[in-house]
Structures are given as structure tokens and as C-alpha cells.
Length: 202
Image 1 (cartoon, rainbow, N blue to C red):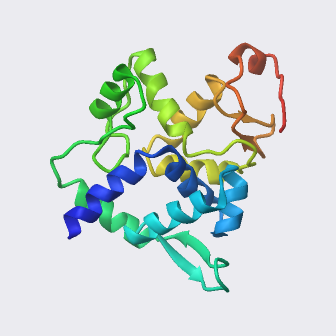
Image 2 (image 1 turned 180 degrees about the horizontal axis):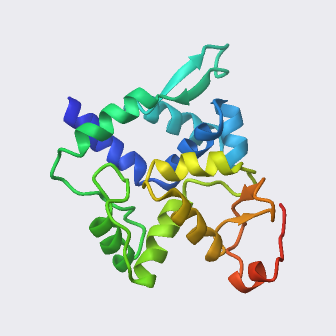
């Protein structure tokens, strides 16, 4: 049964929307409606994702409400328990089947079974695949503080500052010049614009 939960967790992390749900809850506990609005997805999809994550022990109900008004939060103890157990398993991470074969191969080579980053590739093209994967934890239109960005990245790799810088340098994340706000643009920006100080706050 425990192994089934671990396999379910791997599948959960391989799903882009579930990664984004975890990203939203990293920022703050939220209801189904708030998650749906933050991710711009149907209410039923948000409800199903949260139910699935709750089932495998990744999230918990922090506060019970009427009908679908429960407030969900990350179950950090549950996440750590599952992740620690998974690191002892020999099975590999299974990427989203919708990805191209090259990206799938890179993710299987550089990610742990729990979806965390085992090793950062030196080759630029492979690093871009890892950054694109990491970016799925951030939602378009959501403003993050630097602390929140760090918390999200730390779930995947300990080199928080380096990965944050890479995301900025590649135009995948943007930030205010004083570092007070970060956000994911609807489309990746040209790094040259950022070097010129061009900022587009959503």
C-alpha cells in the first residue's frame, strides 16, 4: 500500500497542473475555488487534483467548511515521509507522456523518483528542459515574494539561488528590480530585454 502511494506521488508530480497546485499551496493554504481561480482551471479539475493530492498524503484539509469550502494546505510531514521513502526506491521518474522524447529522456536522467532534481546538467539544452519542468510549479498571473520562490525551488533542488537566477536569465521568471516581486510571464521573455531593465508587471 505504501509503495502504491509512492507511485501515485510520482505520477502526481509528473502532472503539470498538480505541480502548479502544489505551487499555489506553497504560497498559502487555499480553498478549491481559490486554487481554480489562481490556476485558471475548472472548479471540478481543481477539486479532483486536490482530492488526489490529499489521497496520497501530499496535502491535508487545514480547515473544514461547508460543502466545497474546505481550506487545503501542504502536508509537509506527509511529503517528507513519501519523498524519503521514494529515495530508497529504484524506480525512476516517469515524465508526462505528452512531452517530446528528448525532454522525457532528459527528465528521466536528471530527476529522482520523487520528481526532485538529482543533478543539474551542464549542457545548456538539457538545463533548459529542467528549467521548463521547474517552471510548471509557478502559475501565470501570481505574484511571488523571493521567499516564496525559494520555497518552491527548494522542493526540487538545494541550489535555490542558482536555479532562481537561471529562471530569470532565461526569461522564464521576471522580477522587479528591487527583488520584491517575482512572476511567471504568459510567454518567456527575451533575456536581452531584462538586461536592459525592461520589466512587464502582470
